Structure formats: C-alpha cells, structure tokens
Image 1: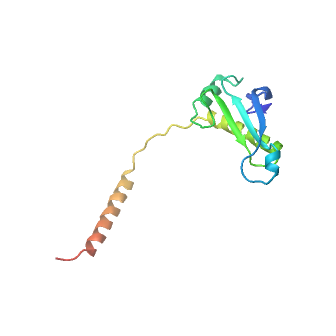
Image 2: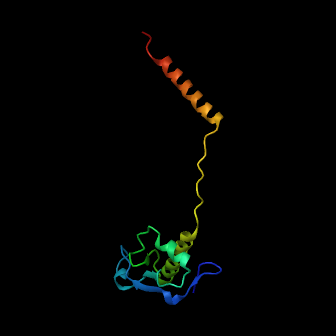
Length: 136
C-alpha cells in the first residue's frame, strides 16, 4: 500500500512493477541482472479520488501516455529493491504535486516612488552619456 496522504492511498494491486535490464555501462553484470524497474500506474482505472485523477490526467508530462498510464523508469541504483523504492517515491511525488493548487497571481502596479526612481535613473544615465559625446 502506497500512502499519498492521510485520506488517500494506492493499493499494491494497482501498481505494476517489472524488472528490466538497465541501460548504460556496467560491465558483464549489466547483461545478466535485471536491476532497473519499470513502474506502470493506470490513472483512469485507479481507486484515486476523481479530483486526483483529473489533475493527473491534465498533466503535460511525457511519462503519462494517451491511455492514462503513468510510466516511471528507475535505474539509478545497482539493487532492484532500491530502484523499486525510488520509483514508488517518484510516483508519490508526482501525485502530490499534481494536486497542489497554484495561487493565482494578482497583478500589481508599480508605486509612484518606484516609477519616479526609474525615470530619475534613466535621466541620470542619459546625462552621463551626453557628457561623453563630442562637442561640435
């Protein structure tokens, strides 16, 4: 059971973990041992609340395919157990970040003093440049 928050958790039966061979260098052991982990999580068929599903499916993430399956590959470590833990932790982070609501930005006007300061500095810079010109 993967616990997302106090009220939300995902049963192990909804998460498909498969061991695959890791890419990259590593000598002869790489060709024999499947230490990398492929985690597949079907968002649409999951027991997550509807709000969570909508937010996850709205993500513009390349790990989420058109069928609504989230695929995470972990091959950072040499042990399968550690890669499994990392993949599950990444899934938890993705789900938590998808649910966080972004604050709406309130546009503000610059204050009068800040406008005055900006214009004064522009004038000062302009006068400095004028003093460097050739006198005709």
